Structure formats: C-alpha cells, structure tokens
Length: 42
Image (cartoon, rainbow, N blue to C red; front, side, top):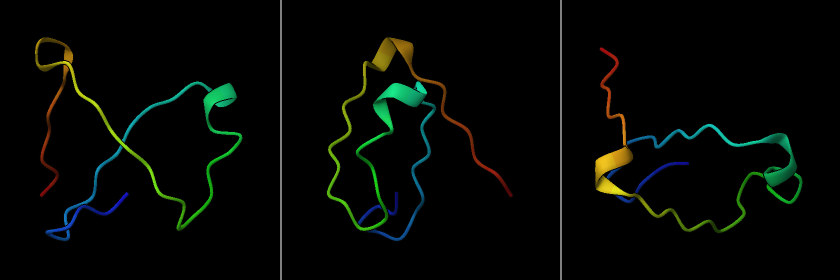
C-alpha cells in the first residue's frame, strides 16, 4: 500500500483476510501503538 506521501506501508495478514484484496482497492489501516513494529529499509 502506498501512503499519500509516497511511502510504502506493509502488513502481514492471514491468507483468509487477503481474499478480497486487489491492487487499487481502497484499504483502511488501524494501528495499536503498543503493538507495532516500525522499520526502515535503506
């Protein structure tokens, strides 16, 4: 998923939750601040 500023957001989902996803489909992401792992790849 590409964010408004051009950065890419990645997530790991169970296969059952990816069945309805396709490129260009609108998605909403929610985060629990005490359960997130944030990383930068350089």
